[in-house]
Image 1 (cartoon, one colour):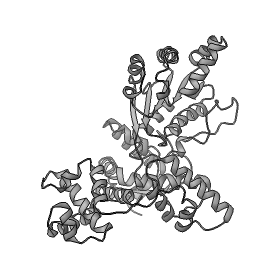
Image 2 (image 1 turned 45 degrees about the vertical axis):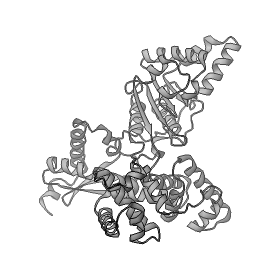
Image 3 (image 1 turned 90 degrees about the vertical axis):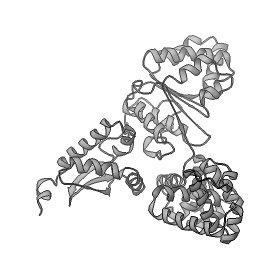
Image 4 (image 1 turned 180 degrees about the horizontal axis):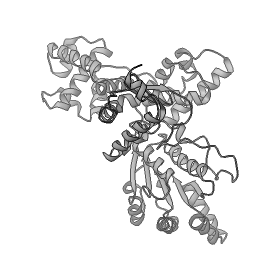
Amino acid sequence: MNALAQAAPSLPSAGILWARILEAIRQEGRGYALTWLERMRPLDLREGSLVLGVPDRFFRDWVDDHYRALLESHLARLGEGLSKLAYEVVEGPPASANLPPTPTVKANPARPPRLNGRFTFSTYVVADSNQLPAAAAAAVAEKPGHHYNPLYIYGGTGLGKTHLLQAVGNHIWEKDPTQRVVYLSSEQFTNEYVESVREHRMTDFRRKFREECDVLLIDDIQFLGKREETQKEFFYTFNTLYELNKAIVLTSDTVPAEIPGLEERLRSRFTMGLMTDIREPTYETRVAILQKKAEAEGLDLPDAVAHFIAKHIQKNVRELEGALVKLSAMHSLTRQPVTEDFAAQVLKDILPAQRVVDVEAIQREVARFYKVTIEALKEDRRHKQLAHARQVAMYLSRKLTKSSFPEIGARFGKDHSTVISAVRKVEGLRESDPTVHRELVELEARLSG
């Protein structure tokens, strides 16, 4: 047995080292990384490595891809001879987490109205597209009213805003059932207001939303626009809660400045805390979402089928979930094996029609992805980002179409040798550069959808 194994094989030593690493990362101002890192727990010091427990292999791969270099740099500095990380998939909750596991509550009171117990942080898939809103929501859930007040989360339809909003409410309530959590949409807030006015119950309305509310969660706040009287009432409700340090979390499909008919004083208040957006999930995130949901549904989803669905449903998490529910239901009824052919048959009314992929389609998609113009792809400019986009477009044209090198060159205003050089360069980058690999996977998924 070597000296390291004799000196530090136990969990306490691993735990102390891991705590030091996390504290060093926190001191560097990299608190966003802790959203992921604190979900791992130290297991052992073994063969020159710090062994960390992770909840599943998808989590392991994501953390390893994004944070291994950061962790190993701190490990080399603080680990007294340790220099490498190792992972083990373990069951059970992490020792601590910024995205908290949902505790089990056995006693009354009942869950607050409209909160769905399925929407928790543990069932929410975190990725680059939603990392900041997820971390901010978790911070609010841990200390309501102390962080990011108000928290304003915006993004397109079906991207997971409601899941995150409800996860905040569920965690706060399950951690402390005495917390009075009020969750509803702006439409429901308006309806309650109108009904209270009509039935002369405004005292009860104001008591509910101001005096008997510790956490206010409002979904789809954009529908408050152009409703002057409701906006007035919400303004005073907002001010009362804010002054009492009560947590306020809002979701919307757009930023406050773009909500039609929203009063300026509300726009100002909505931007007082933190505004953060949820973007469309990447291809890898869509696969992870499908496999996470399949696990929750008890469906054995082969990787090939998850990739097949993720390639065809690209923008909407809700559509991904709907496709999985339908697939699971048909599998339960027919007992047929879950294959790509089975998925294609079951989801034929959901999946978009296949597009014809030609050089022009590739140019359009690449230009959109890298935020350049199609004309710029055909020019002779040598700007680094533009040159990379042009090379990727040439590579994909060669890979996804039957066009020859000269034919591709003609579409870009280049000779065939330039195309050959571009293809070889991108092939090399795909093998050596993880960022380029992810870009190509995402582009191929978009073009195949």
